[in-house]
Image (cartoon, rainbow, N blue to C red; front, side):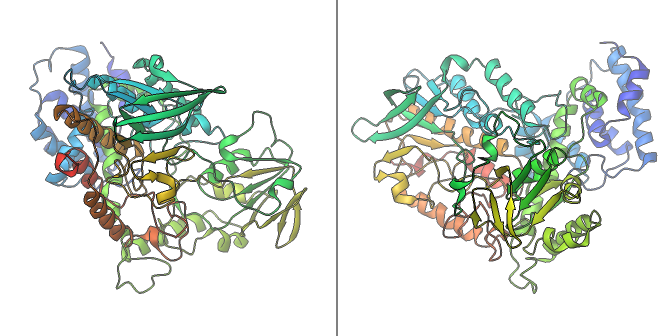
Length: 623
């Protein structure tokens, strides 16, 4: 591949310079190169230049131009020695401008190398296991890929008509991911062609569809097939599964079940007096209609969480009048790149410079990993515990408040948009200014109150009746009610009747009541402090693969986690959660169940969870 110096000079102007130096070090095989280059400062979330000044960047550009010219146009570096994994630790330290603790190196190497979970084929005795994967979203696709790799017979049942899960269902205007896309993708299937740093729904759904097709999962997948019930037989160690497809009911038996239904798939319809009486258009944000019910309409959006935060700026200019009913305001993380496109030069760097995409992913990952968690733990000695929970959390409160105030010219908005609860108590949203800009428009109104009554023509508020043509319910999902609406009958009766919205599990993956059953994105596995849910999903499928290998190797018919293991894990989970900002007395969120206890979200360090899921222990299970 011959590339002119002119093109090289153009593209490196848009490089992430810490990442570029890491890639050049691997190209040359010379670790001393790191010491010759300007050292980045400590990496911060969303900042990819290491806080380097222009003079420092210029020094890197000079070196990069010569090295890349030789790499693309000569054979100078063909014999460069490969840098060993043990030396990659030094490059990690350089890229993030700080010492990466030794204990994190194996996990980060796994990410940098794009290592996929366990792929060893099962021996013949294990290949006879039949597996049902419920759902063809991000987790279901991953599970299908890994079942293929270890040699198991499997089926995927998907209630919808296409793959993608939440990225298929949520088509509302403005829908996009809030984790940087070059990290929000499978570690073993990185995409160099994302059009935006935080891509929109069609592109995300397309990514998962492409992966689905690449691994030829279609032949194993039944669409429009909804699992209605699952019943476990202890005698045969089998799951009897009843499903419906276009009105036709089928009953089948499987050795193993992997639930990939997730937490965000059943819309939460609020119990509002008179909701069914409204004569206009009313729908949940995840069920956005095909026809235009926004343009030149009087529109109400109920809710101000993640969906509303994206919808309002996207539809504001189309509406005749737009009113948001907000129960409590969200905290926002300043991020000017939130709607920014990825330039052609950045795509070129990701695609053509060896290891560039890996180091870029690492730079996105590291500052967004476990460093934040300590700031989300309550300091019992902290004085002003109503507004913040510790000194770091209070400093972040000031930072986020200042960022909001800098965007506000209408002072009447201040009390409405600045939260009174501590930062990170609820899901943190990405702020590029679009939300507050929309709220300043003359035809956009923010009501800081919950909706209690709806009439045939509109919504009753403190100011009286507000009439609307369309009501959008941006009210979230029934995340705390795991596996609904599937009726699951395990060895101790109906799972939902037994636990309701307070499930007990081990690692959010296995359940004492449910032998031969695994969950992905199960209880206590949502990530609100670090990483991406795809990282957690890869951890979970790693554990599931190891569990199935143990089942086959030990020639067992059932795998049941011991009750005391679940109880011990649950006690530790709840003890840790009780110390977090998510359990704060002033916080009410979808992380919590009907008793106000957090059940969806993980309080663990990513490192802790990675270790547990990469070290399956057969002793945790009944013989």
